[in-house]
Amino acid sequence: MASSNGSSVNSAAGSWTTWQNKLFENALAVFDKDTPDRWQNIAKAVGDGKTVDDIKRHYDDLVEDIRMIEAGEIPLPNYRKMPRRPPPSAAARPAAVDHTPRANSHRFKDDAERPEGSEDSVNWTPRMN
Image (tube, rainbow, N blue to C red; front, side, top):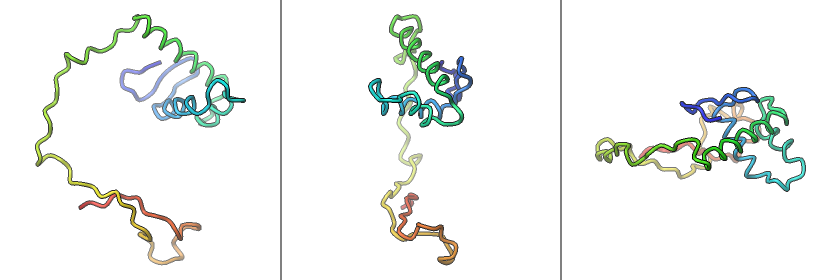
């Protein structure tokens, strides 16, 4: 199930992108085994045309991967042998970013260009100091 580059996964259920896998994992956390219509809810959360059968196959693949890892059939990377990166110098560090929301900050010439329902919107774009 895992890919070497992390971009997509091939399984019996077809190709899965990293984003679909993230949606799948999040949905598994939300819809536990006791949730009614669990597989339908997960398929809906993943979207992109994934069927209930696709979701169940992908889940079975995940369970098998976990079993193989726990049984020692898949070697884990030896992180201790990997070189450590030195911390970046102060000059190489990016400038601090202010994540404070700015109320009524918009880039519309006039209210006619403003999307409907955005009158009370907050601009969450980071502001560089």
